[in-house]
Length: 238
Figure 1 (cartoon, rainbow, N blue to C red):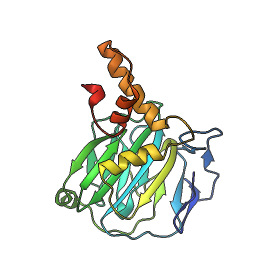
Figure 2 (figure 1 turned 135 degrees about the horizontal axis):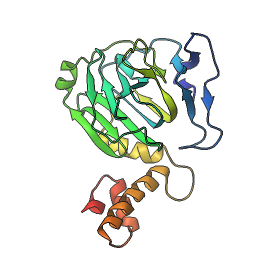
Figure 3 (figure 1 turned 45 degrees about the vertical axis):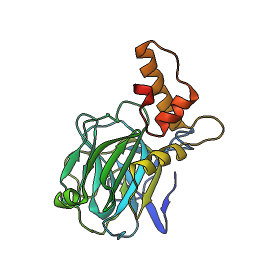
């Protein structure tokens, strides 16, 4: 878990406004210890971050809450979790853009990526799939603007639709430019690399592949099939 975004230091803050010890897990998660949130504290940037409309970010999440705020996106947007455990993106104006799954509060780790820009439009990416996408014109019509942000993890400043985040966040990254779905897919793999053998993401995708094979009562997945699904193809599901 890093406590910096470039030159922006993140300060651990409690619900009372005083500094508190934001926890970390005692064992390796995606890669090293993860940030642990109990619904009472959050990390916040010391100063406002300003950027153009195009930006992106990704993170790994293991949530233990519903109707909760996960983090602030640049330009005043937010990532939250709805009452069904599904990921929701809010624009700068607070307009909700809700996915229909997969739920991320099932006790397992999930990869979440978000990107907005003129080339790829707006994308919400969960566990290797684009679950929501729209054009940049549709995104700006939904309320995306260039707004300075005090970046936060574990809470969203001024959010009153639910609770603060409970669970774990690991291996986060923020970019002042957009990312394609193809790039997010590769970031998912690279962010979970621990050493030799399959990464966390590859093991996750391989298990999905095995599930499809098991349902069809056919042979287990070959390495080429694992590679194919990791690259975003669907050969395992056919």
